[in-house]
Image (tube, rainbow, N blue to C red; front, side, top):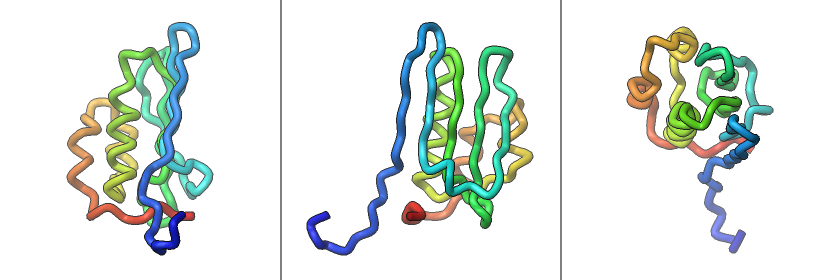
Amino acid sequence: MLGAGEAHRDVPWFWSDQYELTLHMSGVPLAAAATVERDVGAEARLLFHLDGAGRLVGVSGVSPAALARDPRIGHLMIERGVAPDPAALADPARKLKTLLASGSAALPIAS
């Protein structure tokens, strides 16, 4: 913005409380080549959006406010350039926090 020529590294995000539910979005879901759904309960839906190389580029979902931790961990995975195993993302028995270490150093967000 000031002519420094540096890539913008902040991951865009959004949330909104709608009655007893919270909408979450991080990253750029439209940059996805594939989407993985994680079963987080009857009143919740969490989607992970992966690019063609398998890197997490977006997280979106709707859930009770108590589940806001999972989208936040997804946000951190995007920041760190993580390319998680899709089966691990879909498995509700697998703690998302364990997938944070599977990424490389932070990469620029695709434009």
